[in-house]
Amino acid sequence: MTAVPLPDNIARLQWNNRLKSGAMCIFFIAAMGIFALTLFLMVAVPVSLVPDSGITLAQMITEPKMQTRMLRFFAKIFFFAGGMTLYFIYRDINNIGTIFSASPLALHSGDRFYRAVENMCISRGLKMPMLYVFDETTVPPQIVTAAVAQGVGGKSALVVTEGALNLPSALQEALAAQTVQRLYTKDTYFLTMFCFLGHFPFHVARSANIIARYAFWLPLQASDVLLKMIRPRMLNLRLQKLDAGAMELTKDAAPLDALASQLATPQQLDDYFYAPYLALFITKPQT
Image (cartoon, rainbow, N blue to C red; front, side, top):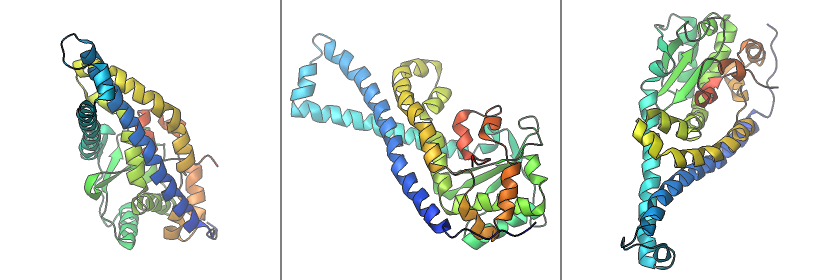
């Protein structure tokens, strides 16, 4: 494989991506705010209409004491939604094998893929992620992709397909570089948060019992309407399917170019996984 020189704007691309990640987190907070506000109004408005309840809509609007009480109530709902999201992330990162129908990957330092990930983690001062392989009944073995997730406390996981493990050595190193670079630049934090906060109505509805699912239907739908409009724009703006910074680890652009031709597209993966999880995957770039 002929070596390809590295571009000279890697650092600028990384910096721009980090700025975009920070700015886009505001949208997550806005969606949680809409969820909390809708839930608040579902409780406050009916109460204000009940005769002899002692609370009226006029009091909520004009009386400072009542406004303070309502603000505290809204804050409790907002922080409950935030805590619930953190719980989902903590729970799911510890059950990543179940979520993705994957099994622990029994590799060690003698295996080239494990060695590539381990060496690159050491070079970046990172902990080795937990390794899993997708079951063949979940993803056809010929598909080449990997999912990277990172949770609270820096715990991370890498899930690969059988097709990725059968790649030539240079392409396995390129895939390892993509994984480690996402962990190093904290891109996995953004993408994991996107997976959960960007789709938190999905996770709440999926985890809630049938009574809570109907009780929270309106605020969840209101939040998802906002998120549905901005999710594609956020990913298109922020996510380069292949991170240019990985070339700093491979020292050669050629394996990354070759890897791009082998990777699955998000549209292909949509046949096997829920849409909220697709942002975690290393997939074919659009350009």
